[in-house]
Amino acid sequence: MSQEQEIRPSDREPSHWYQGALIHAAPVDMEQGEYHPQSTKTATATFKPVPALPEGKSLARIVEDARLKFRESNRGLRIANYVLIGVMVALVVATIVVALVASATSASWGNYVTWPLFALVIVAFVAIMILSSVSKKHSQAKLATYLENWCADMAGAAYLDVEGVENVQYAIDGHVRDADLINTHYWAVINAIDSRNRILFTFDGVSAADTEVIVECPPYTSFAADIEELKELTAPAAASDRDPSYWYAMADNGAPARESTDPTKSSAGRSASIGAFGKFLTFDVRATGSVIVVRQAADTYLPTHLKDYTYMPDVAAQLGEDFIVWGSSREFVRSVLTEKVIAELKALERNDVLLDWFLSFNNHGLYLMLNFSDDVMELPFKGTPKQARLRCYPDAVEHGLAAVRTIVDEKLGQ
Image (cartoon, rainbow, N blue to C red; front, side, top):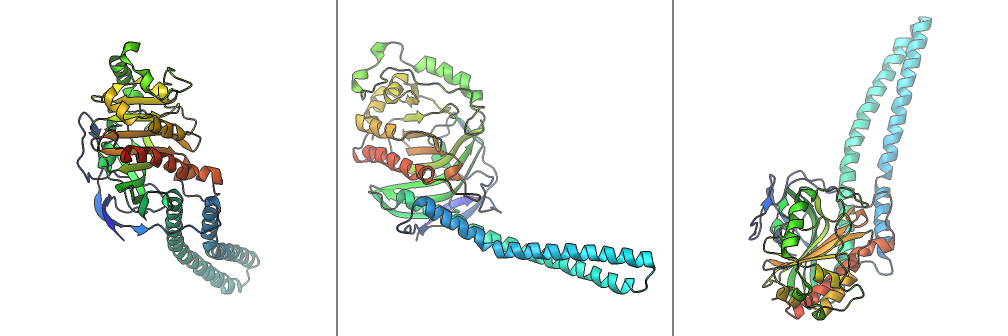
């Protein structure tokens, strides 16, 4: 069992994303960028080995069994609480009825019955308060266990038994190093970083991590005009500036990269101020240049921290119509986006669960941000997503690791 120093705010509820950004834990390059961390305090997360998944069960069945077990664990206390509430209501009604009848008939026995009934109402009310407190503590403990099981099962599905992956550990109270998110050079301004459920592992001998994150930024529309101007300045002016024969031949060769539409209108319900919401993978590999590859949807939050980057729509067209590419130089980008890497990145397809993604590779590290829907990011309560939807996470990790393996093993761009 190992430990990694992490930073987190106080009073965190394990079932929710919490507020507060993280203190820098590694060298950060914020040149021409802004980050506005909130108050934090230091804590140490304890990592545990990811347990093996039960044999003979699908991921959806494992998750559904855990969900039903959680619901059943609170059933007895809920029933007891309902019974006590019913008893108290009955006692209140009986007290009122006795008091009215005694008053109407001027019966002397009224006081002998009304006051004991009223005392029983008070006793029932106190019992409900005590049971409510006990039930709340019990529910929080069961919820923490359910959340831990969910995180362990998802980590196991994504990383156990994957070739090249070793020493997989997780901590639901482990947090991203905000320096890693900053060093992607994807966001010009970051207002807050929240995270949970950190997974540590080695991949082909390289230290790696996977953390659930949410990155809050100003709306992309506030940067759009400047980005469009930068595109005009850095995009190739003529076909002679390109070398399409180098690139992997695709059916859509030469098609323009699709531009993002109004980011305030999202079919997935994403806020315009959310720069990322999903699984953030980091790999301890350093590049000699910089490249950002984005597979975008209509509402994708596109890169805004693009100092010294060149817009490469011709390169993006070789990957597909929904790609955008920025890089420090064409020579470096070509050295990284080989035919094999391009094929592996194209296999990392978008859908209504994996909403979009980006890969960033520079002198700080290799980063892969996978933005997911609530099927992957939300702890199931009312129902479990179908198997195909849950599998979008481990399937995306598989394709992402395939691209990373080629970059690492063939020392591309290093």
